[in-house]
Length: 291
Image (tube, rainbow, N blue to C red; front, side, top):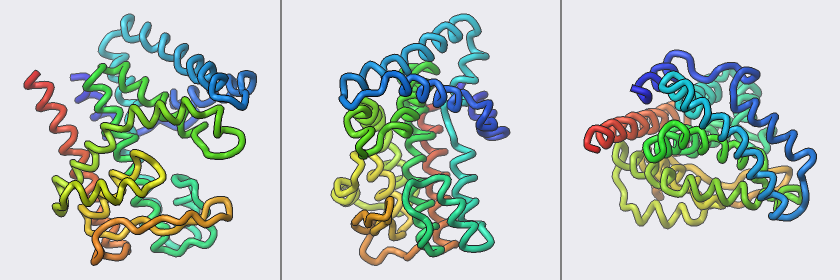
């Protein structure tokens, strides 16, 4: 019942406005803690990470026991981002002009967008869609299945801290080591589950082919759903991108004869992702029924 009500709220409402969203409050709490705990070493980062996570988690644990299912439904609903995930991608695909597409894609990726063409914007949107199909939907649902609503909320906090601190630059390289590694750990299984789901609903390919290309990705996890989507939808993803004025050299993902990205191809890929998420939810219901 908890999962059903949470998914219903997500379908009907989606994410609340940013200023009211608990993740935004959590982000402000993390920024405040960083302002007086920051130090350029992993031990300081561990202390900051532990404090930022432990206090909200304690409040969530208390709320879970005081308010029961009502609170649990809110926890699960606010831990997933299914509706907003597709809204952000559609904003790129349905933009009226290139500048609008660049503005929309700049909201969901960290790469330079000024020189992007339409295909670049659409490809970046699909890569973000694939990665966040795991981060924003399958991973919180996986941890909900393992540890209940508190598990989903804890995952969302870990993932949010990595999004805030997990950058390879002079400020965060050491301080954010624990934040980045913990996110790698909690996403390890969900990223691969997401990739499998995409292959189940899309074009079939040997897992070894996905694994081989995914291992060339800078992230130990994000490459799996991105490469899987490229194969499942028969599209070409990856390729070089610009980040902070520097070219980030990346291989192409997908089959050798994969389709180049265009608006129709991108819509086909969105259907693959949507179907894979629906299959993932159906599998959770089945496992809950069996167990």
